[in-house]
Length: 179
Image (cartoon, helix red, strand yellow):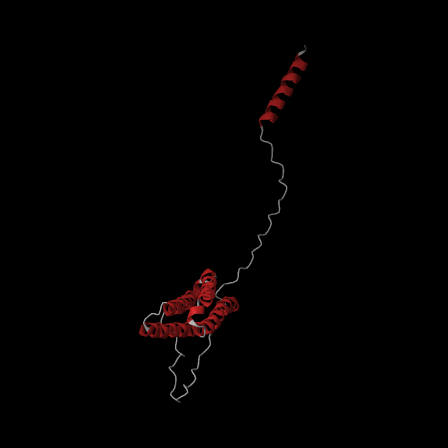
């Protein structure tokens, strides 16, 4: 081998070694498109339109209960079991109704009223003391009034109480109940 070809081989080996040790520039990355997240607007359950939907469902159950209660009040004692069972079914539906936190007081008054009416009817079946039944009936009316006042407050409605048949003004129910 000649000196020249030896030198050319060494030079070639040196160049190959140097290029193997050098850092190769990274290939340009293929741009990736990150999708823009889509947000689904969850309506505020206490906003006026949503609130009205929840109140309407609660009030539908209350009106159904009131109708059943009126029927039960006009049913002979020995036939009260079926109306009581129907009132209990309505109360369970009200208990199971999912509501937003802003309706907790409304639901509390509703269920307390329903429980009191059912207890009155069961007491009437058992021939409970008439005075106790009368006190429970007054409590049931008060709870129903509190329910009505709370519903009006939530809806932003001012209640105006009609005058009682004697001409004496009825109690003022336009105020906001205490929390």
